[in-house]
Length: 209
Image (cartoon, rainbow, N blue to C red):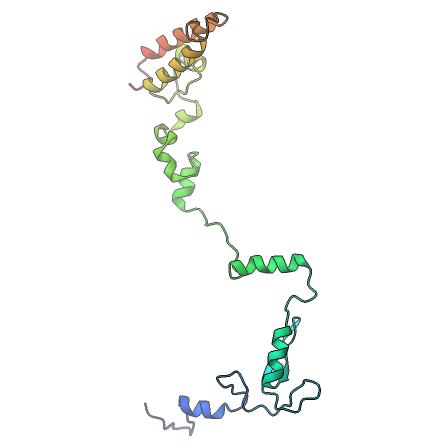
């Protein structure tokens, strides 16, 4: 790289470092070019080490020699005089490097699942796997009056398959049949209605097998 500049400026890195003599800090943290005197009472050593004046003025510094800056740092307490709530709040922030955890925004795919009533896409492998995303989920499927009544009696959904309706039918039978509920015959009328409802669905052509 050519250092000669037609305008008479030396823009090399080494030249720039040489110019920055003021405030140069050594490996120990001392400002070698400082001409200050240690601000500790009674000390006349060179003040080459700086420390924040107070928690409310961390950009305003006191200058000490090495011995007294160590003493000052050992006594330093950023939270001195702060209420416990402020200390706890700062500790919570420090746990995440002062970057609050925010929920991820839903992707377009997740929003699409949400419109179908599925909060987590993985639920398609569970109970929601048999749901039809069409209008029948809302109970607006066109059915003959007798079959609509049968579905309501069985407490089923009009988009279910015959196998699913039959499963619901058996569930009701176990509750209503006297031989399966301790001999209670108080619900025989309801039992007969459930049997009638299943007969309507069993022979229907509107439900998938």
